Length: 274
Ligand code: AMP
Ligand code: MN
Ligand code: MN
Ligand code: MN
Image (cartoon, rainbow, N blue to C red; front, side, top):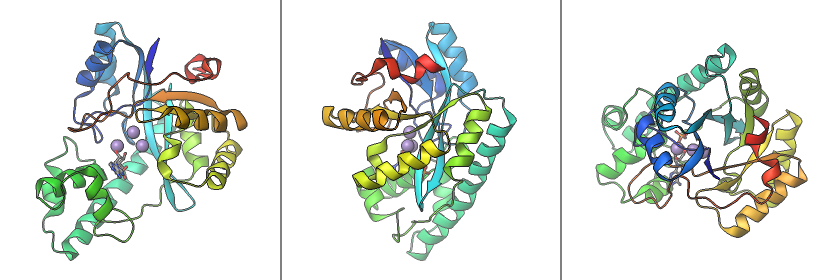
């Protein structure tokens, strides 16, 4: 059974509409799917309409930015009630942080000679919620960098131009928002944070400590070794497992919806517990 529980539409930093994303999932042969935009569920209703048309099972999802030891960690909320007030108040808080950050990023870029960054970046987004990816697209299109990899290396991180830290809420609050909405909370793409083994274990212990539910064991770029390693972490900390491509629909991306390695322990799959 093909399952993909992590993807983005233009309600966050994806390129396609929710219906286009759902259509692709259906064409790829997915039987269970979730749209997980960053800090918003705005695309969920449209995704649901399309999924119903195509007879595809859809789980409501979101990818929430959280803060752990000065790092941004992404927490997936799967099987959420999108009408829950606690969840939506939390997401509104993150959306406000994003707006404030966008202004700070623009100011920081202005200081290094890049003018009108906010206005120019806005034209890359269908909504007023800007992600760093939108700034990245603007910088590429203005000729500052050739691709996403280069732009995140030279801008938008750490002390680079456009690098602005955000103090997102910690694990405890974010997990609470998701649980209040009846969903399961999972750490997304654990290998993308480039942590040492010791550090990732501390992260998982802290996540378990606030009753976090699971780990994204398979992502769109996972190698066999990476799946094995993430699965071992899930086992060690008794976490449920999920799989998702993290599809954004950007050009030159190899990631495809529904094209994922199998979960090593299907009995621990998060969808069995939703
Ligand atoms: P934000 O949530 O606004 O901080 O933006 C984070 C998003 O930027 C991630 O979800 C990725 O889609 C993208 N991103 C972050 N780092 C990189 C990178 N090194 N290369 C490509 N995309 C990245
Ligand atoms: Mn993204
Ligand atoms: Mn992410
Ligand atoms: Mn994602």
